[in-house]
Image (cartoon, rainbow, N blue to C red; front, top):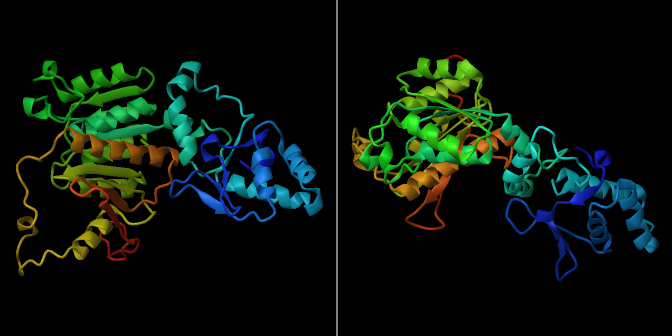
Length: 377
């Protein structure tokens, strides 16, 4: 949406500007990735953002800036261009935009705080600050696994207002699950996880359509059939078995053109990978680059598991599971709504042992990748 199409352009409340001691203008908050600093030696840009308070249309804003700086003889086109630049940068919304009819009053109240966060992180011009929430409401998500990571992701997606969520899970609730799979209670012991999860999720929010099935993905054909069944907008993988399931997901999503994300924990490391076919590295590209990057100093023929042994269980608690699930839900919301913009082909997260030490992996698409290369081998 352009500034000329807005009824009453307004600087987003979360992006309210202020003047620095040296007379520059800072806008968009002081959050890295959002804020910006503008030189304003004559002071008229400050007047412009003050005038864009939602009470004037575009022509009235231009007139107000001209009126308050008569000595500068500012061309109206320059003022209008500055408004357009601020709008294109994502700092402006239309204060006159009506609430969307697709969202009921109850839904707007439920998601009112979500809307303000989306508005804060959103750097795209929108016809309405509710547009990202509408995109979530229309979205269809397939989630494989509702254990620790998957259960937390499902909870966050449902609370956030994703329109349709279909869950697939083969297991039953066991006592050892309850330290981190927070959808379940003692009363659920022995119950299929999918049944207990659907009950808990439907109690959380009545608006999304939440469905599920008890089943296990045993090969790429199973994944393809699930994805083709309802034309999902995104696949979320929160299962770590069979061991090749991420490779299957990568190949199937590349074939079908479906964005996907996978998340989990490895001891104190919690992370999520985000992939979009045709944009950036695929999962196999990223994994190959990470293998090359490691400096394990293994002897020839020595298995890398000696450096990071695999156990028959995953060391985990409610914190690591919930963090990985939250990251998975965050990735899904970003893929579905565009807020925030995440460049795909990456893995990010955190190391709970060392605050401030991030998990951050990114790689270029590999021309020799067996999964996503465009030319035959």
